[in-house]
Structures are given as C-alpha cells and as structure tokens.
Image (tube, rainbow, N blue to C red; front, side, top):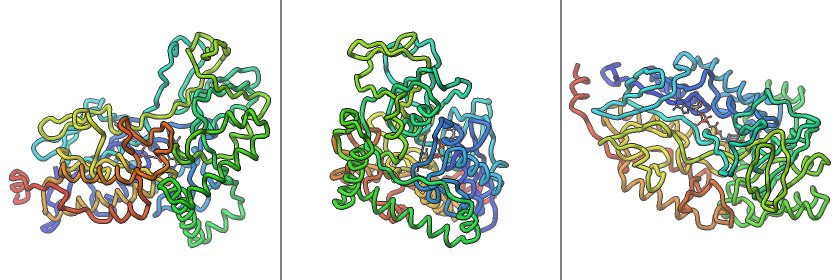
Length: 501
Ligand SMILES: Cc1cc2nc3c(=O)[nH]c(=O)nc-3n(C[C@H](O)[C@H](O)[C@H](O)COP(=O)(O)OP(=O)(O)OC[C@H]3O[C@@H](n4cnc5c(N)ncnc54)[C@H](O)[C@@H]3O)c2cc1C
C-alpha cells in the first residue's frame, strides 16, 4: 500500500498489467513523475507485446516509422519508411533497457484476477502470487487475442495450420508446397506477397476485398540514417510531417471531410485500376463499400504478388475444411499442405479473460454485458483507481496508437497526482459521464466512412463505434485535463489513518 513519502505528497503503489508498448511507456511516465513503487506483471518472458507475438513474413507497421515511435525516444536509424516488425521489437527492447524498465517487471506472470476491495487492488497471477496496490493500469493491448474463423472441419485439417499471430517458423514454405491463406486484411496483405515470393503455390481465400493505398515504402539509405542521427531537428520534422499527413489525410478522410475522402477514394481506385492488369481479377479485388469503411490497407506488394503465376485468388466462399484442404461452396476441393489463418483479432476482449472485479463484486463481464464502454476510453464506474490503456474508442483509423497512448499516460499521471495531493483516495467515473461520453461518440459516427456499407471490427454488435470518430486534435484537447465533475471521488477513513501515521 502507499506509504507516506513526504508531508506534502504520498507515494502510491501502482500495478501495470502488460509490458508491451503501453506498459513500457507507463513505467517511464510514472518514474518521471517521481512514482517509484511500480510492479509490471507480464505473462510472457519478454517485453514487446504485439511485436513480440507477430513474426509472420512481411510483418510491418503501417504508419510511418518516425510516427510509430515514442515522442521522447526518437529513432534516427529506422531502416524503412514503414518499420518492420523485428526492428520495432528491437526498438521496444532497447527503450526498456535504456530506461531500466525491466527491473520493475515480473515476467511469466499472467494476471488472472484483479479485485478492488476496501480501498485497494489485490491482483493474483497464474504463479499463485498476490500483489496489492493503490492503482491498477491495464496495458493488455487491443489486438492481442487472435480470432479464429468459425468454419466447419477446422479441427480436422491434418496439415500444418496456424494463425498469423502465432506463426510456426518450423514449417518450411517454398516451392512445391500448397498454402491456403484465409483472410485478406492488413496482415494478409503483408504476408501473402512473401509467401508467393517463396515459390509456394498460394491460394488466397477472400471473403471481402479491401481498398489498398500504395503509400511508397522505401529503405532508408545509410547516408540518410547518418544525417538523421546528426540532426534531431530533422527527425522531429520528419515525425511532424508524418503526423500532419496521417491526420489531415487519413483521419479526416474517414471522419467525413469531403476533400480528403474523395482524395483517398480516387487514390485507392486508381491504384486498383493501374496495378491489376487483368480485368476479371481487378473486379474480384474491387470492394463494394466506401474507402475507409474498413482500415485502409497501406501496401505496395499485395497487388504485385497476387498477379504472379503461383498465386490464386479464390472468391468462392468457403464451405468447410477437410483433412487435406478446403471445400468451397461450389463444391471444389482445394488441396492444401499448409493453412494460414489471417483472420485478425478479437478487439472486444481488452483485459479479458482476466477476472476484473470492482466494487460490490462487479465482474467486468457483467459491467460490459450490454456494451463495452468506458469514460474517455479509460475509466469505469465501480472500478476505482483503475485505468484501461487503449480502451474502447481509443484508436483513430490509420493513426499511431503510440501517440494516443502517450496522451492517456499523461492523463493517468494527472489523476494519480491528485491522489498524491490527497484530493481523494478513490476516483472513478460517474455512470452518467460514461453515458454522456458514449452518446457523444455515437453522434460522431454519422458521416464517418465506418458506416459506409461494410462489416468491420470498427463497430460493435449494435453498430456503435469502437474507434474515436473525431480528429486527433479533438482527442488531445479532450484528454488534456481530467474533468473532476465527471468523477466520483471519496476519502476513506482507513486511508485517513494511514496518512496520519
Ligand atoms: C500485426 C499488427 C500490426 C499493427 N500495426 C500497427 C500500426 O501500424 N500502427 C498502430 O498504431 N498500431 C498498430 N497495431 C496495434 C498494436 O496493437 C499497438 O500498436 C501496440 O502494440 C499496442 O501496445 P500495447 O502495449 O497496448 O498492447 P500489446 O502490444 O498487445 O501488449 C500487451 C501486453 O500485455 C500482456 N498481457 C496481456 N494480458 C495479460 C495478462 N492477463 N497478464 C499479464 N500480461 C498480459 C501481453 O503479453 C503483452 O505483452 C498493430 C497490431 C498488430 C497486431
């Protein structure tokens, strides 16, 4: 529990769950704010989260590298305009080392229960350990739980089969190997060209075609890296330029700004028109929904790859899987040696399957039974002193979540500082503030590309957005200062006696 640090400020204890990009960030921010009693619980044996897990061929970021970087730790030596997954993983490991984050982490400890009672959080792990803290910050990720397709016979397949987020590098893929890829999202668009390059016979099973924007990806020359290493101003300019482009093109296009919407639309349509030579193939690849309705895929390799002789685009829907292949609805059996499931993630899990239990034994499954919701994506009624990083309505389509995470981190620190100043012992969002926030988010949905006639993870089962439907600037403005009128705060007598001790 928090101990008395000085007459003015008490020291909180904080548990951070997860050591991905967000968990690392929180340790650095908390320490910068003078908060040192930090325990990070990470279920795996290394930091990195997404970039540790996703090692499929071609894995890369799809926002410019200098933007997918902490603002306080620029990296002048990124090798590509869009950083590759391995290099991103190295970057996070480097940051964790440099800021000595690892000393706060307990690796190989998966949190199974987190319970708030009598003014404190008690957190249990699969190692039978119990930790107690004043605050819990949940940094468990958004695209963390692979989603598996609901196709009959999936368990019967006798060849090698794996999800892209669990790539099996022991399986040799090359000439003479028949590979089936289910899915055509961002990950598939990166992995498929690499599989085709290996010489394997690749069949791509497409349910929904995607709009693809060919933003030029290029390797950064040694000369450029040296130049950037010598000039932090140039790196900062590069970053600002990327933020400007992503905000003024992507986020405005998908949130209903006419000019940007048209520009993005024409760009994607021209890309399809001039990249795919064969008319029949082009039509198969043409989406029938608005550009931006699903995450726009930023890619220059997929269209090239899919036109190779060893690539086959199959648009007939899958009927079932057999022990040695896939049967499509037209009755054709496609023999396969390897099945790659590029079927995305379950974005609605957030911290679950953990038992997150708030006041009055409220389980998170019950709190969210009607709808997944949080105040400003981060705070929940009945869960005092709890913050969810990258919660519902955080991401902006095609923007860097690092930037968003940094803003959220500052918000957490400001709230904890109020606790340190003894303005309260407990803080949680008021239910009416959550409702107001959700109504506001829902209102923003009108006019966005997400209601443009597609099915995507951007909307929940009721058609409400899981993303932020306004601009980046609006996000920053609204997160700048905690609005305490939206909070329930409380002083606890037990803590009062602690303070006096
Ligand atoms: C393939 C892919 C590409 C992406 N590309 C981009 C991109 O270009 N731009 C962008 O902005 N975003 C991108 N994202 C989104 C990406 O998820 C985030 O950018 C970022 O990795 C989120 O960081 P995080 O720390 O919040 O979560 P994660 O990286 O998922 O880390 C969560 C950590 O929590 C740990 N954890 C989870 N549950 C528990 C538990 N119960 N107990 C203990 N530990 C736990 C996990 O092991 C993990 O280490 C991409 C995601 C994927 C999957």
